[in-house]
Length: 307
Image (tube, rainbow, N blue to C red; front, side, top):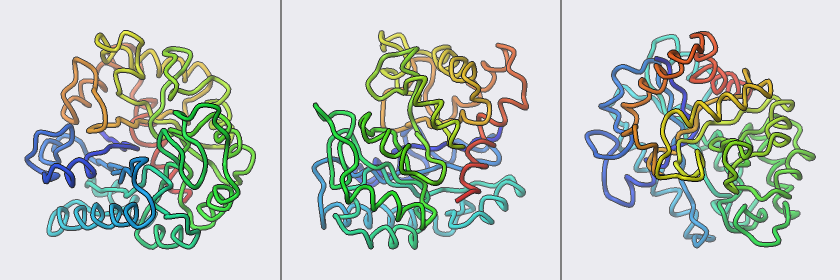
C-alpha cells in the first residue's frame, strides 16, 4: 500500500512526552511501517492557543530540532522539494513533510513566513480552534474572518509555496480564504458535516469550493468527526464520509489526514499499522485500486507537487 498522510501530531507528542519516532507506543512509530511503500507523512508542529510570540517560535524550533535529531542517520528523508517527493515515490521510500498547525507560530511577523519556507514547511493551518493574529478559529463565538495581517499572511504563504490549510478555521475565515486565494488550498484533516455535524467538519459547499480550486481534503480518523455517537466510531464510518465526498465529485480531491496522535481513533484501529486494514475495507466495498491509489497517495502527492 502507498500512503501519503496529510496530518498527524506525532512529532509534537514525541517532543512533549520525551518519546521517539521509533519503537514507541504512539499511533505512529516508523518501525511499524515496513509494509507501506512509499510512505510520506506530514508531521505537524501544533501551536496551542496559549502559545504566543517568542514561546510559539521556540516551540517550533524545539520540535523541528527533535525531527532532525530523530531522522538523522535513518533512511527517512525530510522533504524540502518536489524532487524529494518524486525520488521517494520512485524508490518506494519514506519521507516526512514538515507542517505547522497554528498561525501563531509567526509571532505576528510577516517575515517569519519566509523563515518557515526556508525550514521546509509546506503546509500551515491558519489557526487552531481559538484566535490568533491571523483571525478566528472554529471555536470562537461570533467569529470573524481573516484579519488584515491574516490576509497578508495568506498572500505571503502563496508566494513562498506554503499551502494554506483551513482545517480549524472559522466559517468566515474559510470564505475569506476562498475569496482571496490565488492558489489551491486544503483542509488537511476534516470530514463531512452532512455525515457528522461536528463543527470542524466541512459543508458540501465548502468541500465543493476546495474541489473547484484544485485543493484537497484529508479524511480525519477522529471518532468525534466520524459519527455523533463517537464511542461506536469505526472504520466503516470512514467509508461513509469518503462515499459522500466522492458523490460530490471528489475523486481528485479526497485524501487521507489521519490526525494520528492528536485524537481518539476508531475502535477497530490501533494506529499506522491499521491503515492496511482500512485500505482492504475499501476494497471489500468495491472501491477499485486505481481510485484508492488517488485517495491514499496520489491526490496529496499531486497537490504538493504544485507547491
